[in-house]
Image (cartoon, helix red, strand yellow):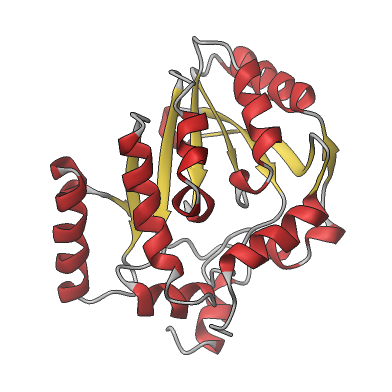
Length: 235
């Protein structure tokens, strides 16, 4: 399973979930996170995280959602935000960065009074610094990079991807900082020992001191998450 190459998986999946400037989504909703946020749940990811709460959309992207234009996505997000009096919007669910031009066009359409929170695994931003440069154009953008574990071996065990993918996640944070993009790391530590947590804390503080106080990504037993983790010997 850990022979999966996340960059190739990203390319292959993008061919399924994007078409021109269109991208597949499976729902739009208000959510309680960040104190209230309008959310567009996209389809398709380059990782196979065992704890993923939208697993079925990840592994069968061809069977879920429908294509939306950037204008439709931005319109839905703005509509939810205005109705609920939210000040924040996001694309979540799977991996928003797979359809680069679509994402950038959505960002162009989000008004400055709404903060766009980009939740990403960072793989593509780490692989290509020009992605971070493109994102730096948007002052109302904040990027949350979700690290899958504390090191390469943990990353591979949790995601099914080659351990080198973890370094792309770290590189994403470095690229974003280099181009002045507001960002912070979140780390899934539920399967990590104290030494691993200490090591990633030290490593992140070397990138930016405040990253030592990283966000803890919570493990939520939605759907069949528990069964998947037990079958993989993680529980």
